[in-house]
Image 1: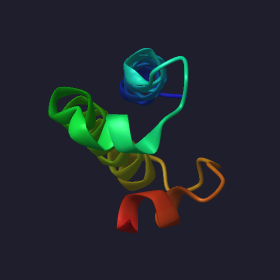
Image 2: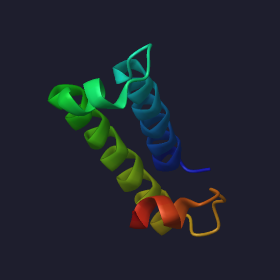
Image 3: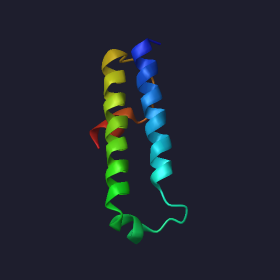
Length: 74
Protein backbone atom coordinates (compact mmCIF):
# COMPACT_ATOMS: atom_id res chain seq x y z
CA UNK A 1 0.00 0.00 0.00
CA UNK A 2 1.39 3.37 -1.01
CA UNK A 3 1.88 6.27 1.44
CA UNK A 4 -0.73 8.40 -0.35
CA UNK A 5 -3.29 5.64 0.08
CA UNK A 6 -2.51 5.38 3.79
CA UNK A 7 -2.99 9.14 4.12
CA UNK A 8 -6.34 9.02 2.29
CA UNK A 9 -7.52 6.10 4.42
CA UNK A 10 -6.57 8.10 7.50
CA UNK A 11 -8.58 11.04 6.12
CA UNK A 12 -11.58 8.75 5.69
CA UNK A 13 -11.27 7.47 9.24
CA UNK A 14 -11.02 11.01 10.63
CA UNK A 15 -14.05 12.13 8.60
CA UNK A 16 -16.10 9.23 9.98
CA UNK A 17 -15.06 10.10 13.55
CA UNK A 18 -16.07 13.71 12.97
CA UNK A 19 -19.43 12.72 11.48
CA UNK A 20 -20.24 10.70 14.59
CA UNK A 21 -19.18 13.61 16.80
CA UNK A 22 -21.68 15.91 15.04
CA UNK A 23 -24.60 13.53 15.48
CA UNK A 24 -26.70 14.15 18.59
CA UNK A 25 -26.88 11.49 21.29
CA UNK A 26 -30.63 11.34 20.92
CA UNK A 27 -31.34 10.93 17.22
CA UNK A 28 -34.06 13.38 16.20
CA UNK A 29 -34.26 14.12 12.51
CA UNK A 30 -36.27 17.34 12.86
CA UNK A 31 -33.84 18.94 15.30
CA UNK A 32 -30.90 17.76 13.21
CA UNK A 33 -32.51 19.16 10.07
CA UNK A 34 -32.63 22.59 11.73
CA UNK A 35 -28.97 22.40 12.84
CA UNK A 36 -27.38 23.93 9.75
CA UNK A 37 -23.82 23.86 11.14
CA UNK A 38 -23.90 20.13 11.87
CA UNK A 39 -25.55 19.36 8.54
CA UNK A 40 -22.88 21.28 6.64
CA UNK A 41 -20.08 19.72 8.66
CA UNK A 42 -21.39 16.24 7.96
CA UNK A 43 -21.89 17.04 4.26
CA UNK A 44 -18.30 18.30 4.10
CA UNK A 45 -16.97 15.15 5.70
CA UNK A 46 -18.97 12.98 3.30
CA UNK A 47 -17.33 14.95 0.48
CA UNK A 48 -13.91 14.28 1.99
CA UNK A 49 -14.68 10.56 2.11
CA UNK A 50 -15.82 10.54 -1.53
CA UNK A 51 -12.76 12.46 -2.71
CA UNK A 52 -10.37 10.22 -0.78
CA UNK A 53 -12.02 7.09 -2.19
CA UNK A 54 -11.83 8.52 -5.69
CA UNK A 55 -8.10 9.21 -5.31
CA UNK A 56 -7.44 5.74 -3.91
CA UNK A 57 -9.27 4.06 -6.79
CA UNK A 58 -7.39 6.15 -9.37
CA UNK A 59 -3.99 5.47 -7.81
CA UNK A 60 -4.58 1.80 -6.93
CA UNK A 61 -7.41 0.42 -9.12
CA UNK A 62 -7.12 -3.05 -7.55
CA UNK A 63 -7.46 -1.72 -3.99
CA UNK A 64 -10.55 -3.38 -2.57
CA UNK A 65 -13.09 -1.09 -0.93
CA UNK A 66 -16.60 -2.48 -0.92
CA UNK A 67 -19.16 -0.16 -2.53
CA UNK A 68 -16.51 2.48 -3.26
CA UNK A 69 -17.99 3.37 -6.64
CA UNK A 70 -21.48 3.75 -5.12
CA UNK A 71 -20.09 6.07 -2.44
CA UNK A 72 -18.19 8.20 -4.95
CA UNK A 73 -21.09 8.45 -7.41
CA UNK A 74 -23.61 9.46 -4.74
